[in-house]
Amino acid sequence: MRRSSVIALAVAAGLVVATGAWLLLNRGGADGAATGPVALDRPLPVLSGRSLTGTDVGTSLLEGKVGVINVWATWCGPCRREQPGLVRLSRRYGDRVGFLGINYNDEKAGARRWADTEFRVPYPSLFDPDGRTASALEFPYLPDTYVVDPSGTIRWAIYGEADEAELGNLIDGLLAEDPAPSA
Image (tube, rainbow, N blue to C red; front, side, top):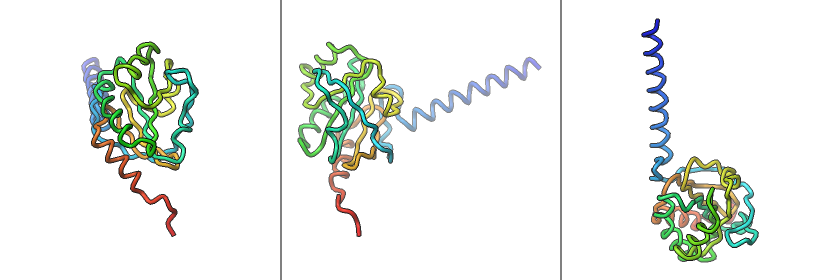
């Protein structure tokens, strides 16, 4: 009886490890390496709060346009690697695409240095020190990037480090969609 309990416990532990590995491989790795965009079809929750500079900001700045929301933190290595590409994309698209960062579980002074000095991020970031705002997106870990269509539907998520070219292709695809209703 004792030996069968040990075997059952070992089998259960193996299933937990296998399930965890499958989830990581299919949603992006815990090290922040993305496995590719995940198609979604869910409404963007209303997110609002104070930016890193103290102004009121939220998802309302994305209304009626393609939007990109990126959840990041200064202590996240993959966030650091993807930030230059996000800055370039934001500058490339200008006013045609709204960008919004969410600074997750961080300290404000370091986050401001990141955005203002180190990377010169041209779009606002919500300051989310307790993670409540970011949790509304149901993100699994950092970084995460969401691409939203002009109607306010999250169409794509990248769980893990976003590739600049891949994210640009997702944005271009939404910009190319015909906004006129079909007959």
